[in-house]
Image 1 (spheres, rainbow, N blue to C red):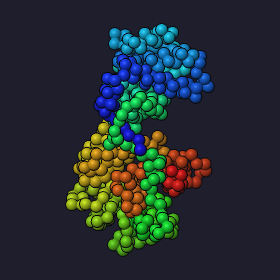
Image 2: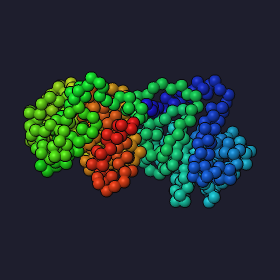
Image 3: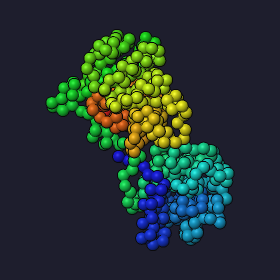
Image 4: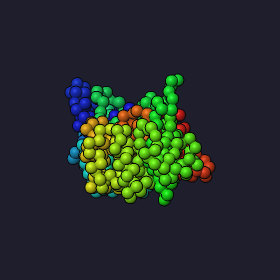
Length: 474
């Protein structure tokens, strides 16, 4: 499991090291790791290190000192190094002196021969966009197509939210120290490398799952399991207008290794024609025994849709509320009053606004936590970085997709089916939502890489087709 730490936690962990080590040692430790990462990036991009040219854009304080010391270490490996010093009165003096002694040059603009730019403008204590002088430098860098390695975080991107409100650095690689910060999951940081500088950090409340975590918890049948002990997922989805939503949602529940899937709705004939293993009926009351319900995809917001939601929430079973059912719930939030069984809400930004009365804004983690508390539910806020939070719980899961292949019609129907299957198998709601988001994003990536026109690789059907292989290859 990957942990993310606030700037305050990182600074608190650095304090005892700074007090115990000789002055400057911790900075040079970080800079040495940074220089190694830059050297690897140079080699990957140009085929070599010696003779290449790096330009550091240096702000005030320790972040600029890291960049200057890294450039100094690169000089010792035969790299030509220059530096733009944005604020000479506040530059890190020892770092600049070492850089000059090593043969580094202070320049006014990025030299045309530059192979890579090092962003050392601001660190984790800064807020707001780039100032005009730095913005001009990086606008020229971007126009020239020179790759950027950011020190700790891309300057101009908020460390806590990943938001960029104005000019900011676009990094191909971000090298951070001690522990990852929220920006490294929530913001556009390119690839992220972590340099261990010896910090003693506790587990954090902001985490993301890795493949081993999901593989270790994904329900797989044992020698004594049957279709009921593996989980029976019930699906209330689809309509005459949107039968595809029912097909996608039930298909995802099947693919995610439910022991049985029961469907209830007006698309029963279409569902069975696609998935003959699904037990289908037109009435929820006649669906039979299930262990979790998924309600909402393509079901409509009329009386029938409201009735399906009322039925599901009226049970003592876990329920996933998605799509049209979220719109109904926004109009009737009282439907959750007194409910104690797990409930997972899966809004995109527009549905979030209907539920909360306002858009999620820049602080998506805080907004998701607040909505979870408001509804007494688990909330999965969709996006390129999925955020999952549970009411009255500290832990929040992030799932950075790393791509946008899941941003396609019907993709959410697939996700809700996977969540439902995990709830039916008995997983806790927050964990089920986070694991489903991980596998869903992986399936979208695999689908996009697959050859062949049918199903279209970037379609929801393509994602569905890779759910099982994504689980199998965790």
